Image 1 (cartoon, rainbow, N blue to C red):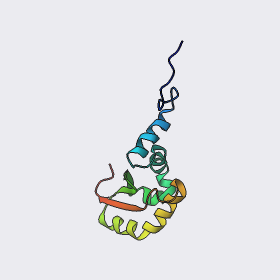
Image 2: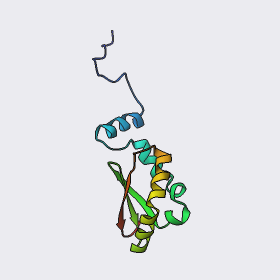
Image 3: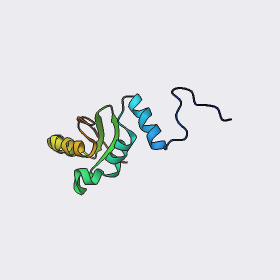
Image 4: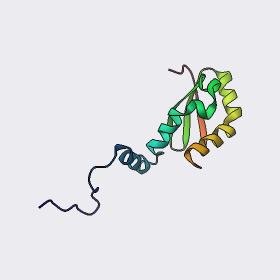
Length: 108
């Protein structure tokens, strides 16, 4: 006879994405699926021109950290911040990303 699961035990195998989302939420970070959307759809969110000069690095809490290729681009992104945050809210839901942190340097 198979052993009964204990209270709180997971009910068998789960998709990795669901388990990772649960861990990320427990750490106070956005769900992995949201992070995935930002990285995979970056050009769609910001447009091809801006995507060629910027790159999302990570999400820290509710702040998106971006690499920009030069100081002038950082100024341009700051000017567009409200619009970019609105687009991210459409993609991820409200309050998932409320600010952008910019890092000037190579986009590697």
